[in-house]
Length: 264
Image 1 (tube, rainbow, N blue to C red):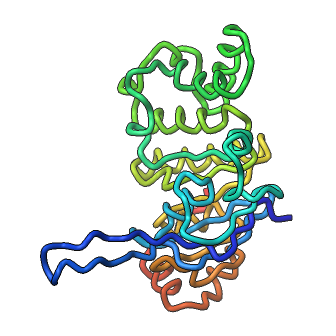
Image 2 (image 1 turned 120 degrees about the vertical axis):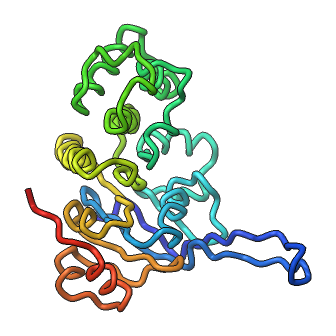
């Protein structure tokens, strides 16, 4: 069953004319007529080189940016036609983990405040209940209550990403866009985060869109893989099918250019 249905989605960015070449305007088709389904409970890996449109697609699905055209249906609701109040409800079920674990956390707020913020906005909880939920969230990502009074700059990159994951989990969503969540981390810490995401998916029944430029990481984590190039999906199939029988030259080049990942 498809939790997310994407049909003919497009985003065109208009470029202002420059003083060179007569000052003519141009456009960039960051996402170009993309159609995809994301099944309930799966991890769909979205892979492609930098600038291929992966992050833009993730943000379009969540309506963090508005599309030029197309349709996104989440759990039966047309996201792009939803009113402000409907989007507020949908935000509970659709969350994002950002690439930069430092830039995505407000340095002015303590960890407890960062994790409590979505609870304050969306749930009517007492201060004690919110504090208990924050503690549960930290425990879920392998941290403890000692983190609550501290600030983001006091943590390592891997710890900050765990806090970002905890924030994404705060409202118990159904669907999470993980936008290059390990690309800013070293390999060993990134592997820990990938394994954490796998465990959380099992425990919370999550569905992921996992965005990455790393084919080995995507292959390790994903149920299916969609390959993106210059704003288009060039192929999408089960992970084993993509790995053993890639259909596009671009996919073959991605597979050839990256080392194997150990299934440990």
